[in-house]
Image: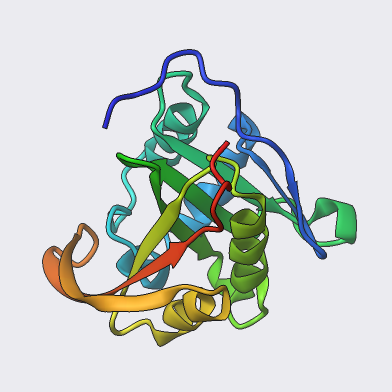
Length: 185
């Protein structure tokens, strides 16, 4: 994966109940609050638990870097009388027109449909012009698997990924979504 130089920030994507917008440095506080929840951290590959001081600030700094390979959006409900940061959705550029989708919402917003709505909006916008999107979820997180299948992802197979918070390899389900021909920008 080669970082692209001098990339513009990701575009704002509109959903029904919120917008997906690039992160701001002021998001670090809520990101740290959500990431500090063990349940959230254990549902991801890369969030450590306990969360070290400065981790959220470093995450935001990487997301704002012109040399990033991952575009990160805040799920921002402030225009719809919701909180400014409901969660995060991201796309990481891979090779040959592929992007990897990752997402999480704060534990207080689980089972609200926010994750499904955010993923559906990002898939529809396809801001990286990907030919194929891939994603994986831990097998003990069927809710996230439903988000993917509800958004048109197809089950591809089983695998394992390392979870920093769990300090262990965890069984995963892998999903793929082939985008419409000509979707690449």
